[in-house]
Amino acid sequence: MTTFLNGTLPIQKIYDLLVEDFGSDGKAGVHPDTTFYDNPPTGMGYSGALPMQAFLNTYVNSSNGKQRYNLGADTNIFVGQVASPKCVGNLAALIFAKQQ
Amino acid sequence: MRITVFPCVLAFTILANAALADLTPQENAARLKQIDRNADGVLENDEVDLGLYYRATGGKFDLKFPPSSAQVAAFAATNAVFQLLRYEFVTDHGTKEEYAFSEVKADIDFRLPKAEKPQTDSLPGGTIPSSDRPNGKFILRQSLDKAPLLFDTDKSGSTMTQGADKLAGEGALFSYGQAFNNGAEEWLAQGLFGYEADFEGGLFGKTSIGRWLFSLGFSRIDFGGSGTPKTSSPRFKNGLFRDLLVVFHWTG
Image 1 (cartoon, rainbow over the protein chains, first blue to last red):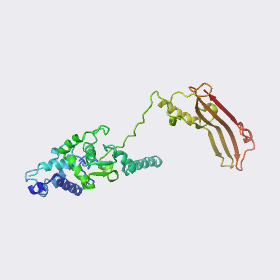
Image 2: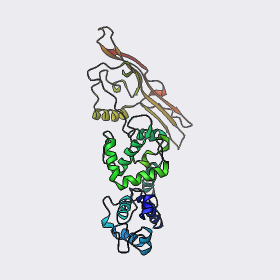
Image 3: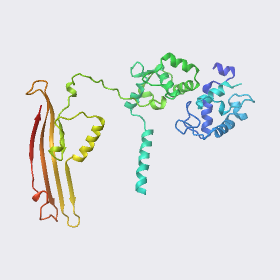
Image 4: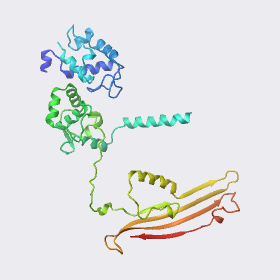
């Protein structure tokens, strides 16, 4: 609640938004430890960094996405910045850290 | 070609279904016991954290030597994946002081592996408990010389494998044949039925150990059907008992 009042999103909220967006991108059964490139059920089955970055550009780095994830206009999320293992939880942590 | 491909596809389907099948309550409980530190049959929050720690680290530690609660708490304070797994767990199961085994799924919530069966303690140099002593057993062989030795040697893994092959090659023979052109039938039974058992004591005092074997040999062939041959089998004249042998062996 405090973080809401401060204007930043808690990491749990960012995670929920990511699960929603991955669902829109056709990826079901997403969990915090679901990886980007492994095949289901442990991963989402993206074939590489390019399609994963395309997802980020569409749902996170777009103007609508930046507003949704509370990111600054000049802030972009790159897949290479996600800590290893490259999974949804670490992506949520990166977006959480880069909030404006 | 279809005959060759079909079993492969069928086998794959069965394996896939087995992998997706829910755990039985017993298997689920057996896996959860691996993180139940105080073995009280329920999971307290620090035990849930241990399971989530196992999942967040990708199963990188041996569950027989789990990290301490302090180590898990230190990891939980800084690891985003763990914190989100905890959030997801609470979303799914609610906030409680403890969770019953039936509420959580070991494979889905914690990715816990199959539990290893506990090893039974051996008694090196000690006596065999009476409940573990070898009991008598029935045997079925082709002939008396195929029956087990009265004093068997030690059975290592390789000799047991050889023993299995031997059993397949030396087993009693039961066969049935039918000639479709004239309807003749032939029934054949040849072998030895026996019972062997160990004993202690006897003529040489308490320290003697022996084994006795009682066996009954049989060898019979019968003909039937419309095309029954008038002449006998070259091996079993007129289809009657050729021999019926009763043997009793003991040694000590």
